[in-house]
Length: 144
Image (cartoon, rainbow, N blue to C red; front, side, top):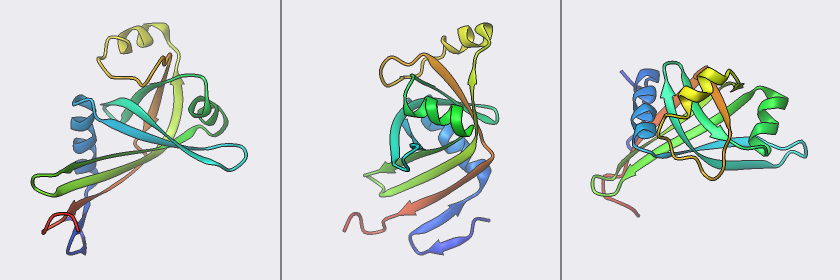
């Protein structure tokens, strides 16, 4: 059973986190990838994604995300959702190793996946689910 954090948040089990982000990716939700520049500046970028087994897959272009993957070989992804009718939401953070998918046959197959990339993205990235955590958030009385 998930641990109670306080009356409004519950920690999610890893399997539940994976289920939530898989459903979110399939519904064209947006995840956010965080990277750190060589100058130490943190940047956060929206990405369309899918969950494939033990990996999150998304596309990117040459830029900060690609540079960070080449330099560090790891990434952090955050995905969340909030229902404004029930005032229940969740947030999941994935940390793991990241690599470019370069095999032409695999890339061709991935290009058939109907995800919504943000702009012209031609590099596929595979992020492993090495460390996954999440919280379900409840607002019993709606927003304050």
